[in-house]
Every structure is written in C-alpha cells, then in structure tokens.
Image 1 (tube, one colour):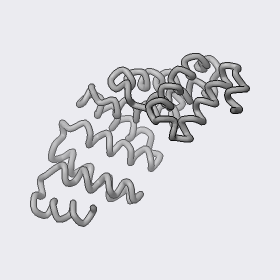
Image 2: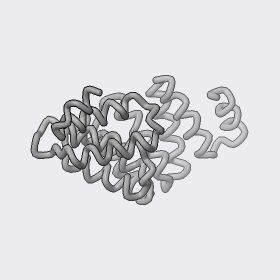
Image 3: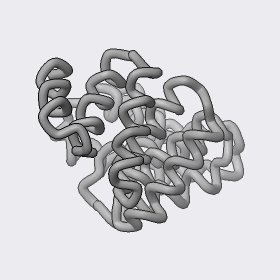
Length: 180
C-alpha cells in the first residue's frame, strides 16, 4: 500500500488524500514520524479536512503527546462537527491519558448521538461508566445499557465488548451474570 500511495503522490504531488492514506499506512506500521510528516503534507494541501487532523491526532496519541493529540482532535471537531470518530477519539484521549472523565463521557455521548451504530464509542462509554477510577462517574445501569448495545452491534463476537458487559454487570451488582 505504501508503495502504491508513493506512486500516486509522485503522479499528483499536491493530492492531500495520497498523503493521508500513506500516512495512515505508516501509522499502522508504527512508523509515527513518517506518518506525521505525511499528515502534515495532507493538512498543508487541504487545511479544511478534519479527517487529516483526526488521523494525525491518533499518531500523537500513540506517541503519548497528549497536547498535540488534543489540539488535533479538537481541530477535527471544529472542521467536521458531524464526525463521530473525532469525538470518539477525543473521548479516548480525555479518558485514558488526560483523566478528564466528564469530558470523555460528553465526547462519547456526542459520538453516539452522531452515530448510534458506533459500537466502540458505546463500549468505551460503558467501560468508563463501569470501571472509572472515580466512583462519582460510575453508573452501572447506564454502563449496562451501553455495553449491551455494543454487544448487539458487534453480534456478540467481540470478546473485549463482552468483557465490558461483564464489568457493567458487576458494577450493577449482578455478579452472577458478570461471572457467567
């Protein structure tokens, strides 16, 4: 894929999509500096495409550069306010790295509002509601609703989602179902 995108870039060196796709391939290979360089090119050629910022934010998050990741996800939301993925990614960052659970839950809620079929946003929201380190942000009932939806959306085939349902059941006091 990288070779093909490189060839496409050679043919059309100002095509932002070519850089974006190649950058994402570098991200998947964990070649983060090369990915960032390509996303920078994509953004330079099309600075109004939120997806490019969101993808670069994923790389910053993988590099544990929370501030740049947060800035990119926020820019992605500003440019593409209907992107559930941008809200979902920012929610993950807020929860896992920034420990801003209120902000994370708001982002997950917004992502689900934009795309009720986003199983991962349901799962992440349920996990935070069931296992969050601060008890005041836990809500077993809401966690079970979200985890159940994530299980349905993944046809009960994703073990990480089923694991989240078990955590939600335990938080709700249904230890029998959680164990089962």
